[in-house]
Image (cartoon, rainbow, N blue to C red):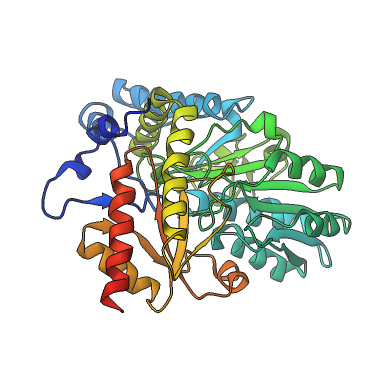
Length: 406
Ligand code: PLP
């Protein structure tokens, strides 16, 4: 049995006491950090802090090993064929902007088609919309079904128009939908498109194997998977990354600079201009260790149990509408809902009075809000440290909000 109460004890921020105690249900925005990750950061800064790929002294070499060692660790974690396919970025947003600005600007032409979906977080839509606008390409978004899944008929119809790139999320940050990335990628490749996956909400919660999925690009953020803020990963297939120009110019990304001309470093350095966030990379490595120790199969089962309980109990409250796939299908631990007559922000504020931290708003997914016919939802998201008691607190809080506005 997954012992979430024991896991919770590893997270100092969740054990600060106080009344009411904190019930943290906003991990889809940013997760909390276990002591092991905090220790890794402190240890890095107290023992080996140094710039990387520059110094020959012992500290610098130790920092090099920590940085490049974590790159190897990340490559194994998502089953990349080589650490060269792992680019450290500030997060998912920067990773997708990198792909749109380099691969996109090099390969997209006037009249080309970019396929995305209506369920995207803005960071997997806006960068593509920006580059499409710049080069005169078209962007089309796959619709969703009543149950919050991608409309596969619409997807196939768009693929029949031979898009150059298909960019979508593996897991919706609003609906909890898990998209069939492997099947959709095979179809996109058959249509001649390159595939870019937003894995910000999948990598923290399920095992992701980039070779099995066969995606060309995949992006995720450390801060949503128990790691530090400000660090993330872009995976790119070697052949695709090698074909791309740099994203930013500066130190570390060059092979040779003269006053007339600069040539580029090999991948992945070509895409890592400037001093990287070495300590945060080390923290990401510790977060991966922690998640792997817990085991992804157990993590996914535990989160599904909590989400299913929340969906069933919220749906049973008159006047509450829950969005996304039902409780009995494979879905992520993200539960979005609306309470009739109470603005989602008021629901969140009243929950906060009782120590329950949830997110309210458009969740950086305005096209999805439009498709759902709402301006905002309240969202509870579950992770490894949540227990069934947290679901009780959520339900009690929603009923309290209804009483306040009755
Ligand atoms: N994609 C999805 C599905 C997300 O949920 C988020 C963050 O909420 C992002 C992308 C952006 O991640 P970041 O802000 O870490 O770049």
